[in-house]
Figure 1 (cartoon, rainbow, N blue to C red):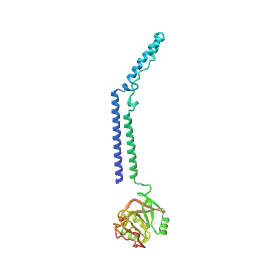
Figure 2: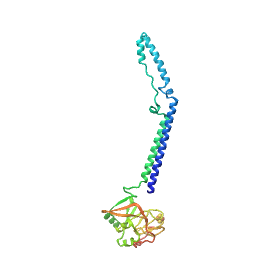
Figure 3: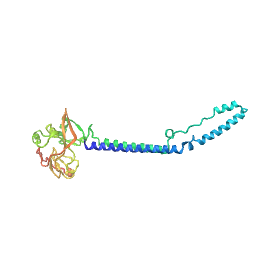
Figure 4: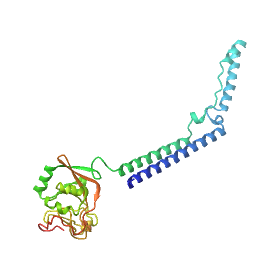
Length: 282
Ligand code: FES
């Protein structure tokens, strides 16, 4: 399992444990609050409590007496009044029908915390998840072979692919035999197809290395490292040639695989024999 996959799994586990802890704590508090409410007796101070019911009973009795006098103390009228007397309400269950301020706050804080942690986790996972649909970290379709070669030839400079952070340049056919002793895998296959994809990052301290139109080399402005057209180190503090990516041909297009950075060749490698073709930039 890769480092990023382990990191994602660890984040998911931590978030799940945090959410479980918060929810169980909130549920425990709710239960405790409900039990306290039950012991205190919800009917004593609530709107449907015992005091209110007693007053209702006294008031109803007076009404019944008054009704009985008004109806000439008729036994039949008294019986009818008793039959229509209001029923005493049972106290409501606060757990079901009522939400205390404490419960409301607990639930609100839990929801807020859960949403925050969930949003952060999603953002972290999406940031760490390797892209498979294009861009750096995936296979990038650079474009049609003819158009790219034509552009490289007419402008006399490598083709820059920003989404792959790559300089794509041609590799001379007559140098492939020499390259076979130095390069391997998809990098060598790309050279055999006539292309090299160079990572734009300087292998000294990581500056972006631009192309120098004068020397026809790559020259780093930070500390002066220089690399020939195919990224082999020529001068400066860089410890090796430019790192690179595998290249493949798909139909009439070139594909650069940026999922794996291949370390550049050791200092002193020179498979093309290209010297500086003009004034240096760095
Ligand atoms: S970062 Fe390029 S030479 Fe130092």
